[in-house]
Amino acid sequence: MNQASAASDFDGVPATTRSRRSRFFVAMSAILLAIVLIGFAPSFYLRGLMPLPSVRGVDPLSQPLHLFFVLHGFALTLWYALLVLQTVLVANARTRWHRWIGWLGVPAALGVVVSAIVVVTFRIPTAQRAGVATSLLLSPLGLFLVAFVVLVTTAILQRKRPELHKRLMIAASVSILGPALARFGNGLAAAGMDSGVAFRIAGWAGTFVIFLLLAAMIVHDKLALRRVLPATWLSVAMPMAVTVYSLLLLVTAP
Image (cartoon, rainbow, N blue to C red):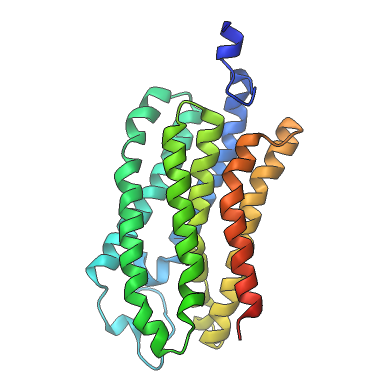
């Protein structure tokens, strides 16, 4: 293999053009982190400083956060913060630091998955008492979590293929963005909208946002490369399928 070939990844992308396009991934990771920080601000980061809608007449601020909610919030924040840091390091050609710090993502991802399972399990009785179909509440979340695990695991295994690795990591991070997007319903409800309507609107809007973020990766390739890399199709296929499934559930929900 000659030096020029070695400088390109398996999709034939020249290494000399990667830095410019890495800015797209920096922007994407920053957007994802911003969504998480804003979405969870009322209920987690700025809890007590921002209004929260009552749940069946009960003020949520009157009850302390369970420890596993705090741990889940910490793991999720760490994951998205590492994502931003890693994309910035790559954009600035700090690949050695990127490789070292990257291994912190393994316990962060494990923490996200384990804590998410505990949180979702805890929510089941609440959903049943509220008359919400448990399958509707859990199925998309569960499938997105599976997508996250598959994409992150594949990204680690394919870490020597940068164009595939970074797309897998971004797509994995988009996959678990749903709960943060749904929390935007807190703002709508606090503004006076019926909480049921507010969170239904947030659910619809959040699902479309996930779809648009995944589509942005395809559009980026088309504009920057004039073709969509196989790495991109591989990265967005699974979360895109779950997104479509989520939309079907929303359409058929009573």
